[in-house]
Amino acid sequence: MRYAKTLLTALVLAVPLSAMAAAIPVTLYKNPNCYCCDLYAKYLEQNGFKVNLINTTDMASIKEKYNIPESLEGCHTAIVQGYLIEGLVPAQFVQQMLKEHRPIKGVALPGMPLGAPGMPGTRPKPLTVYTLESSTPPTVFGSF
Image (cartoon, rainbow, N blue to C red; front, side, top):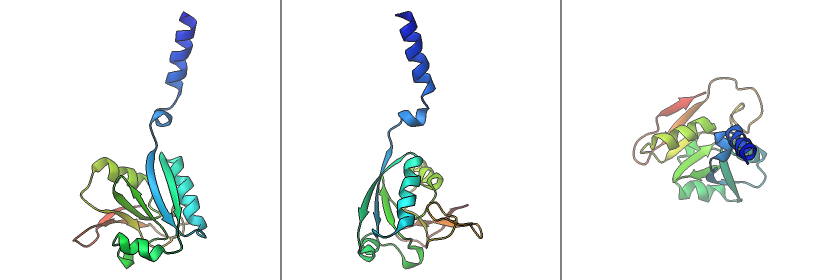
């Protein structure tokens, strides 16, 4: 019996804490033909999120529904814990926003830049992630 308790304790301690933590649910609206969105969803899942993909051929109505400024639009729109994630925003920035509970609508990485999560290729320059704000212009949230 003592051996079993020791073995059980060793197994519990060997499992990474991230594996024991519940994945953070994300709803991701995307065009069904967008491969980078599928790669981004897999990337999020590898970083502690559980992604519910919703395919739509009318992304314009999603952008309009959530009041995404055209200058900040990405290829998909995601919702996590009430925040918007527009485009290929790295998981570190999503996690930072959730941890800090900032009074913003969300974060955005405009376009489909090379080297962003889900977008193959070499990043030609540092990329900037912006805040999505309700009543003020976007500000820089971070860069990578």
